[in-house]
Length: 204
Image 1 (spheres, rainbow, N blue to C red):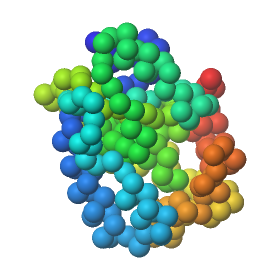
Image 2 (image 1 turned 90 degrees about the vertical axis):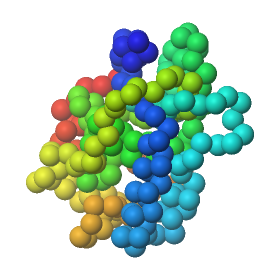
Image 3 (image 1 turned 135 degrees about the vertical axis):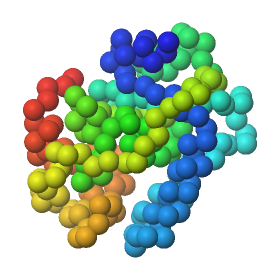
Image 4 (image 1 turned 135 degrees about the horizontal axis):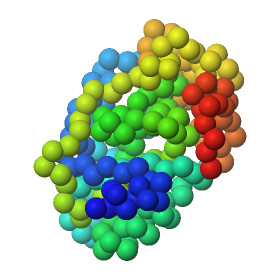
């Protein structure tokens, strides 16, 4: 029901069981073992929430991941209003592995700049994650992460990046070179604006 209500607000939503966090923990351990990570990437991995906090005010039953069209990266207002209207208890979790959950749950695919591309929205959507008391579905999509087919013969984003985030021979970028890192306000969107997929979209 809440997923259908969210779509009326142009919010794409999926409800996932808490067990997906254990999948995330295992996958990130493997990622760290197989790749040479920068200090920044190690720090990001160390801060990601892959366990349910023990000091929560309620017992969570699920994770809700929502993607919406907004220029404001923290515009969770409509989603949280919907939770309140439907009597859902929730906790916003800023450091949930949002892109990972979006890719594994089938909500989107990765681009070679490591952004998430959502059907019809390109990589311009924003992602939010919450612990909630919504009963999780007995069956849910959990798939291998995919890279957008639009990236097969295109590297405009990496070529145009002023920081040089691309790393030869691997998919994982060096995010420490992104000039937005450490900025409270996003100052660069070149990898988004040069993307041929995004150029075709008229959003907001």
